[in-house]
Length: 243
Length: 318
Image (cartoon, rainbow over all chains, first blue to last red; front, top):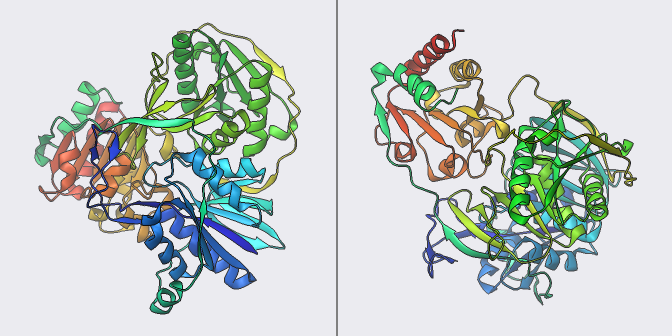
């Protein structure tokens, strides 16, 4: 079993988002970067699966050299080796094309449900279609049975259990597992594990961000005395006409 | 040239977000000087899609479409687009929509933007606004390819019902069979799905335990709202993870978000900050959530929620 886990490097969840260059570039200064939380889950589950069935876990990132510390963390968590496609990730289509190029020899490709920076949720579907593999999106449980994947996935208002042959692409949702924390031995071993840097293929240039803006600020809170809490309902009903 | 819209249905009725997508598609088609084709599969709803802005409605009757599979559904939409010169696709970003849109983009060699929250700008460069950094920012994205797949966040666009009724054309598209098998499906019945809810009542650790959630549920039921919770609450398993809203949970955009006993950490705001009206109830007057709120009550949820419930019942006469 060979699993390829796609890892995205994103700003920490507590980051205050600001922009530079006339609101065209995300301001990275002073920002702490982390492994995308959903990718942490898919990596952990991939490690758990290969520890039971045997096999290897390769992590792949599309990014420049500044993503190496996060790749080393993935190796410290237990991944066998890593691939870094040496390019700045332009958009979902571009990233997916890079991953599809590397993924052909694997049995499974794991991603997170979405990255918490651009929130596209695109890469899993794009990679699946580029490779013509089945897609299981937003999975909360992943198991292997007789060379098939059985997964539980979120749907609107519930869940469904889906079965697929291999190879296939699966994206991870919260609840899949508890993310693994690297231990000292893992951190030491990660230093000597292979991190292969490969060149990007120049495919897809279909979108570009022309500008960022912050969501409109609220005009200020109207406080209502707890003793007159009912007033809130009257306002929501009569003035805001929400129900 | 045509704008293709996927009309998703569930339980023999069209999803509200699909009707939003149809109106969105119609307004976009008007800007582009073209017409709209709505495509439905599986079951149809009772509504006439023309009312919402469909100029043509094609219903696919293939047996392979009776249950959801991303590839067969995307194949069907793609085939029909090729037969009808469709080049712009409008998909509502439901769970199914999230799986269909990327597949369609590859099949059509189209630019793909997900998380769209507003009508496209078509004068000059074709540009859309999408949510970014988990709702902490909005990105303006230019689509430079000829074909475009647009995935619209539910509750971002207002439904218009002033169109002319159209007749439905039934068609077999001949999609291949599904490449995944659905083993079982479990749906919460009688509950409003959080992602589609217009009104949401949510609570956090301030409620002190799962046993107190009846206060949240009672208020939600009286309002016709969905229930949600903060991350600690789902981590402690007071509530299922499917109710967790926030940066690592579900992102929602309801018309009303009532939060009781939630302090409003930046990660929570990321998931709910684009709600149209936010009401915060907290004992701590310094809770950061008040800064992001429209209405605030400094008080104990155990006293305030029952008072709100009583008033809602009076107002609605229930």
